Image (cartoon, rainbow, N blue to C red; front, side, top):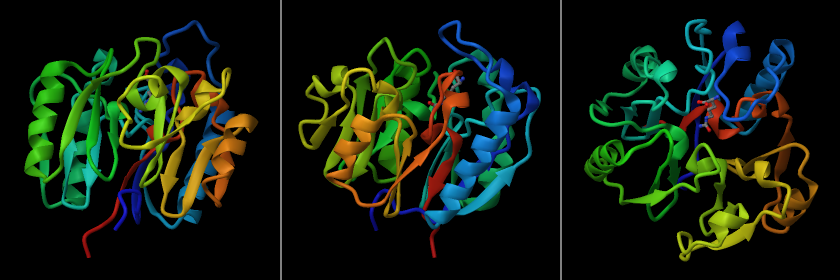
Length: 261
Ligand code: CIR
């Protein structure tokens, strides 16, 4: 089984309040209607990639709750309820907990510090935990201990300060290959991998998402797509322009795992 082999995913329908989602820069509010359509297309792409999708109800009290990747981390062997580092998002972990308990026999919760799932990059050899504005050392260390109990090796690393999450800047493309922005490619973090560096001006292409034999990439980054096409056959471009206005991308909108059968 490859680390990007998945047959299940959890998504959450965007709430109307998503237009108030957090963002670092003064970008315009997303359009709810467009965002909803783009989310629908994303869910269709997950299904087409071979995943059975569980759709959760919208949560108006949590504008960013469509980004289910941040309050949890899931594996075949169990789920971890995280502690999102933005105060408006902390309650999202409690909201998703019953769904985790329904689908996993082992569910563990982070109880110290903060960790956002967007800072976690799982690769075949180790799981990177990026320290960021949302993930602190205390949370990262507790997560590393839990991952160890799950049988995973992890490495705590630093997310470049100009991006929100570690995975805002990189993605696993296949067992040996990482797609990364210039600043992350310039570090030695990925010395065990082949690194595909994103051309200048296309950094938002970094949050791509490998699912089974499909690589979902954000639409509108032709030079990155051309580079990826030399390594991967089945590339599907998805328009995520509305969630991009609130600092999100493809990985943020689902929790993916391979069920134990
Ligand atoms: C936030 O700032 O928390 C949301 N507006 C965006 C979250 C993106 N999530 C992710 O990259 N995993």
